[in-house]
Amino acid sequence: MVLKNNLKEFRQKKGLTQEQLADLVGVSRQTIISIERYRYKPTLELGLKLALTLDIKVEGLFYFE
Image (cartoon, rainbow, N blue to C red; front, side):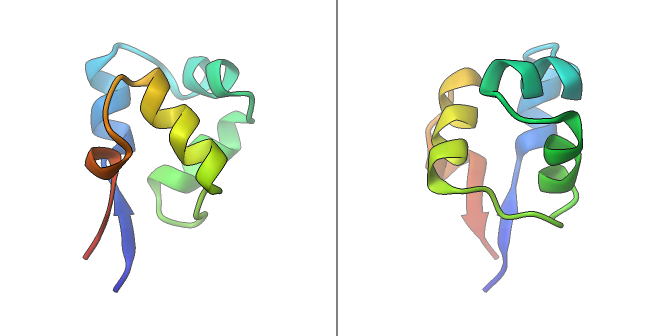
């Protein structure tokens, strides 16, 4: 199983740039880019922050394929 995400989709729906989202959750823009490209698996804490910021359940943001 591979951890996948809908981060880019939900970020764009909220009208946020990668940099804006990064600022909101306290990480670098590069971290957001890496998560969107499946190069970095976020910690549970970061995953929850992203889900809360994007107003979605963490299960809707991250999933296994």
